[in-house]
Image (cartoon, rainbow, N blue to C red; front, side):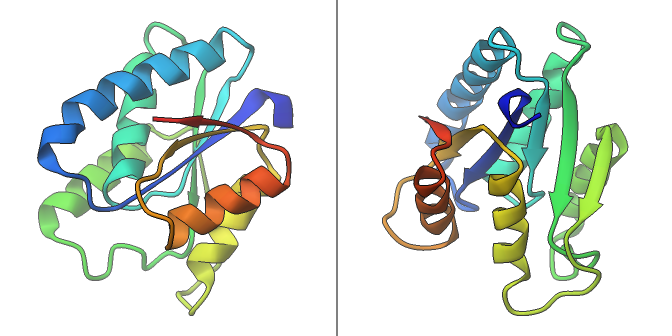
Amino acid sequence: MKSQTCFFTGHRRIPQNEIPKIKKSLQQAIISLVHKGVIYFGCGGALGFDTLAALAVISLKNKYPQIRLIMVLPCKEQTKYWRKEDIEIYNHILSCADKVVYTSEHYFSGCMQKRNRHMVECSGFCISYLRQSFGGTYSTVKLAESMGISIIFL
């Protein structure tokens, strides 16, 4: 199953001028993995890169009906302090997901890391948007590298 599973990790804040390029690169990376037999795509549901990744999977489902979007969420209160517009997009993504997994019932310090570890441990591939050598994305990529996961950097 790991050989058929990819997860996404990336930053929440993305410069506006980079978004079109990231969207195109995401689609290309997903398609290349589908051609290698990957069908499960795990997404952490955060703002920024996670949102772009989930929307990319959703947009490719018509052409590749075998692919599945699995939302791996840190807790049920993830959107508690989000803007209304972002919550609407999040709810749309959840309605299109093939499966939703909560790694914790409630928020606690470390629930994001627990979610990230879950995605790493269940995957053979990772698509990452990494631009800093610190923070959650950096730590997740380092964990994935230490576990021998194949990483596609956008």
